[in-house]
Amino acid sequence: MKDLHQPMPIPRHQAAHSTEPTLYIVATPIGNLEDITLRAVRVLKEVDLIACEDTRQTQKLLNHYGITSRTTSYHEHNEMTRAPELVKEMQEGASVALVTDAGMPGISDPGFRLISLAIRHHIAVVPIPGASAVLAGLVASGLPADSFRFGGFLPSKRGERRAALETIKTSPRTQVFYEAPHRILETLADIVDILGSNRNIVIAREVTKLHEEFLRGRAAEVLETLKSRDTVKGEITLLIGKAAEAEREIPEGSSTPFSIRQRLQQIMDTDNLDEKAALKKVAKERGVSKSEAYRQLQRGS
Image (cartoon, rainbow, N blue to C red; front, top):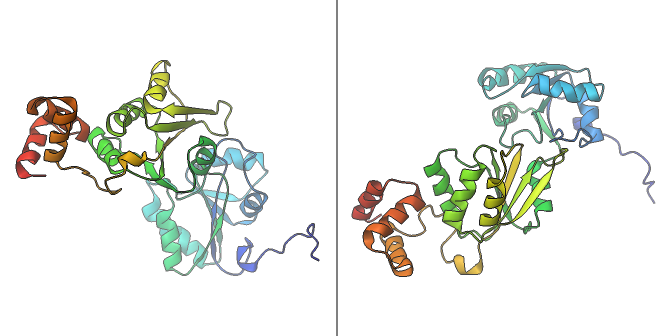
């Protein structure tokens, strides 16, 4: 029988000083500095270079764990030039760890360009798993986690955001997004309009930090709770529950589950509105002007 207390040997390609050039994708804490693995600390100590989204932010973590490895900046504004430079260093024998300000690199953060370039140049890419706001928020949300979709940040423009919400209106799975605190009230109002006031949602705010908070409930209720506050601050993960069975008649992913004409007629019938008032409501739902909705109606969209 194997000794469970015997440390597992480190595979050659996963040791930071292996003979092969290697890019390590290292997850860092999303708030609480204790949320980092022993393996991540070891790799960060052993690599020749740490590529950071913000060197000042990462330095706080490195100082906390006594890590003295050399750092360089790698972010969305310099990745076009920095990615080839880092690949060249690895081809010359350097081991590089990629980190972002928080969480897993490449998830709504810089990293994809460097990772894909390293793969094209046959450089080993080794993930070092760890903290993730998406998974932490999901498992504590109370929403079904057997099937979910992560959509990154919702669009900042209202029309595009509402269109994105239309595509998940009938989704049979939990939806997970990041959202900025200064936009969360507008986003929740759009959710109420498009997905309905009774759709189950969860706001996971400041997860793992001092003021961690989970707001669970119907969309309209959560919106009213946040409206009652002076300000909304912190990192936010927005989780949207799956559609009720009665709402799943339209395939997920359709950006226009009903044509303008179909939706217009539906609203006229259910809300007892005339065509003019119903068209105004359709335009609001789709984030377009009334005149644009009328043009789409004429085109048969």
